[in-house]
Length: 277
Image (cartoon, rainbow, N blue to C red; front, side, top):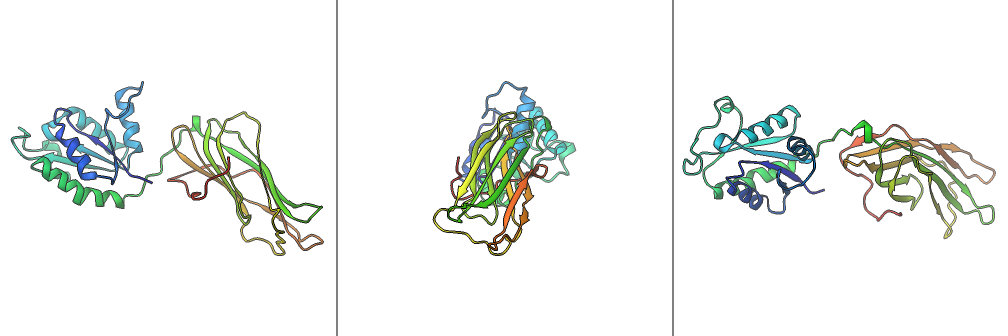
């Protein structure tokens, strides 16, 4: 997953954004308050941008009050951040940082070229060491999925199948839904979105090419679902499948009803092969 950096700086000093973008290169997406249009209050928009970023950068050159306010929001949250400050009097008449900030760790630079080099050589490697923070989902938009599933054998040919339903019984829409059943090959199901109150969606996979005897019980049979809410917060829900058997033919069967409570995760773990929709 690509990195994202939020940058706050006095807009009159546009060399700052240019130098940071050049220094970041392809290492991260750089966003500013002006990057996104919205109908929200500017501070709410900025707070959301900082929350979605892997790192926030604040350039306090010229003692800009708006940048200082945004730094305070990040510090309280807390969001990971770095402080920049230009010491060249030709670019910054106030060559010393705020007196109250004098003891805070910060990166000092003299020219735009030096800032670009610092970002490339120091900030980018630091950014790559940061793990994406787990965002906290809002309760009023949190999806909640429930799954019913079972395995069985086709009486005509003895070949195995897995089928079931998935439904959103939460408060918000679940999108990019991914579902797997462990111990069942090809059981990778995808749903563009699941809307609260809609009828259950069906899923099934049949192994018509070869029988799957399952003469012994699978290890840790279960189901895992991953999805995101309308804010882009990613969740996972899991449950173990009940094991029945062996039957007269020596096979085991599995059934599931319900999933555990949704938990926020940093990013999707169910990746790779395209998901069925």
